[in-house]
Amino acid sequence: MLETFFLNLLERIIQVQRQDSYDEKSLLSRNWEFIFSDFNGWLALYCSTKNIADGYWVYPMLHPQVDVVNLKKQLPSFNINTPSVAYSHVMSGERHWIEPCWGKPKDFFNIGMPLFFSRQYYGYPKGKENYYEFNQLVTHPLGLHWNSTLNSYCKMNDSGDEVEKIKIIKHDEVSLILMRKKILEKLLHLGKWVLVRYFTFTRFNADKLSFDSCTSTVYESEECEIKYEMTRFNNNECVEFRGAQIVRPELPKKEVLSWRYEGDDEEINDKYCEFIVFDWKNKKILKNYSINPKNFASYFKKSNLPFETSPIFFKAEVLDKYKNNPDKYELKETTIYCRGGWHLETYGINKYNQVHTYAVYLARLPYKEQLHWLQYNEEPKGGISKRAFQTDFEGKFPDEESKLEMLYEALESLGKTTIGDDKLIIWAPKGGSYEAAGKGLYYVTSENPNQWHDFIIALANLTNEGFLKKSLSRIAESLGNMNKELGTLGLIKYILSASNNQDKISIIYDVLNDLQIKRGKGKAHGNWDTPEGSLIKDADNRLQDVINAIKELSQVIKTLEVHNS
Image (cartoon, rainbow, N blue to C red; front, side, top):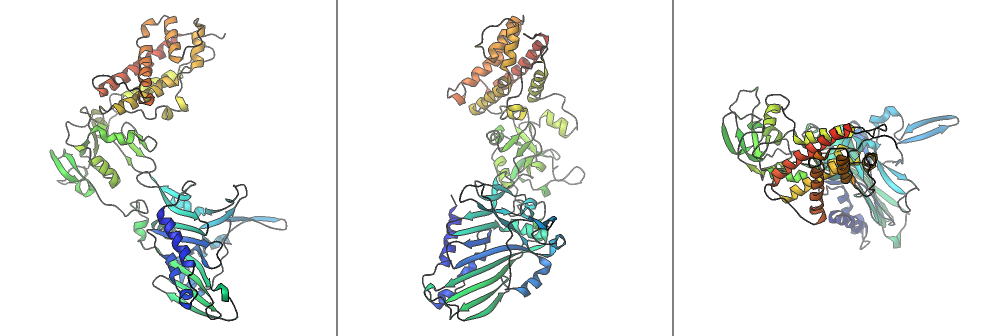
């Protein structure tokens, strides 16, 4: 369903072309010129009315800036050939070649260029055979992609949200294409073009329509760079306006094409939040200190300003936003990525469970994202983590692995362990990749039961869901098992028992089975159950137990022999 803004625009177009009276004032009214306005940051590229004899036709072309003077001399006369393809298969006798819509390839920078093509394909459902396909010359350099749900060409903004840049609207009476003004200006600067909107607009008195005589007058306005001819037929019984309007970029080129030009619809944003900053250079806490880069100095610059690597500390809950939306955010152990948008180069968690990062990296986040971090900002309860100190200041690899790294290594080793002549494997990541299998698995950093349950579910999905029943059944059968009803964990318990590894049952089976039980009592099944005491500590201990279980299982599997039946 269209937004109210677009519906109101369509209604205004329809009202302009419909006349309540056919007096001279109404027929000569120039209220149709509103189509060339700025509609809250949108520009109308194309407009065509349907089933109505009078009304709009607006068609856009990109024209070289260097040729605008000659173009104006030719106006208001024009002859537009609206191409349906960018390249055509042309033949003459036995000769065949590909020909671009602009004619000779060498004329690319000296001739008008279409923004889109009116295509037709009868393989589409009835009523949808005709569609608009935008020129790759427009969509590719601007990074635009088609969204069939929105019926728009879109791109991702710095916050990782999809934003409409070109809107295609097909109404019962109007076809309309709009484009965001600022991203259009970027295109005009890139190609050294202007946008030329050719148009015709006609009004007539159907009861007295006659073309016996006509008079024409040319009008030109430098203010909006529009030049058109008004033709009056038979004493104003029919009036036609025909010409073109030129759009030039208004923003400076160095601004539009700068890497600092954020989201095309956003003003360049130099706003920065004020945080509690630990100035370790001057050994003091700075409160309400702006993270504007000009307020910091590098190691190589003599200054009393704090280092740009001054740490800023936060409550652990600052990460919940990213944990709760894994489709949009990729939260790794030391980095955060927003899909198609920003990324935080590094962060850490100290022994007091505080999240920390550095001013230089926090300042690179969009202002709206800084506001999220600001609400969790607090004074440091201690220093940065040992890992962060080693990697960020000593330039060393950390001297110990994180538990998640240890878990993935253990699972990778288990997945590579083969058994028997057929080289059976008993575990593989669910979904075919560790990324898919481990989706949503993060450390528990708060006493929030939701976070603990999400951890249990994700840990079980990564480990238990990867066991391969067919292979485990083969191994169990070779050890004498005849029970076809056992699940993967039941088969593991049987294998441990039958292979004289009963002492491993508590280390392997009990740990994995308890994890599965906890998962079954989790929020996904509506039967909440959380352990007593600290959830952070329970999750940390449980993760270590699972790592040990996987390692021990891998060792047991290596000792087994399975022969072809």
